[in-house]
Length: 215
Image (cartoon, rainbow, N blue to C red):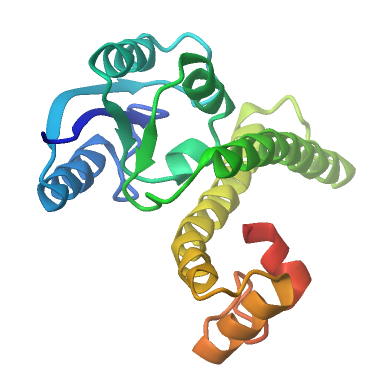
């Protein structure tokens, strides 16, 4: 019997997708995964909602169908999940099996870890925004100017997208290293250094503290 999957796709805004990973790109990735696994996609749900928003009817519908049909809930990329604490909690509460195309080996521990990181990321974004606004105020910029606030938010969001993209790139690489039996931060750092993989800041040397951000 073929394994059954229910796909869930999400973007945060209607304009999202210009970076190459909108609904269409997620759908293509999922379809390729299904074809490789000789499995069956019984339904696909998509919506335009913030990952931190609790009221997401399509997610609820996908979870309900997956549970009813004893299917696996499938998303295209784990960075859709890493910013999405509510999504992780929903999976756990509904006892629905989960897979991500870019990180299929993610287990319950990994999901819990991403839930914690998601909350921390949102707090850091809020903090960076406040600091940027304070710096603008010291320069004499009137903070009531919506254009200034918008530019600050754009800069913060841009940095976050780059950070998320790098994390998504590193997760499968580190997972592959761990499969070889290397599990310590120092060991993973040594492997990354031998492979010549550069850090997020384009440095040539990885340290255990650097690796800690991605495990």
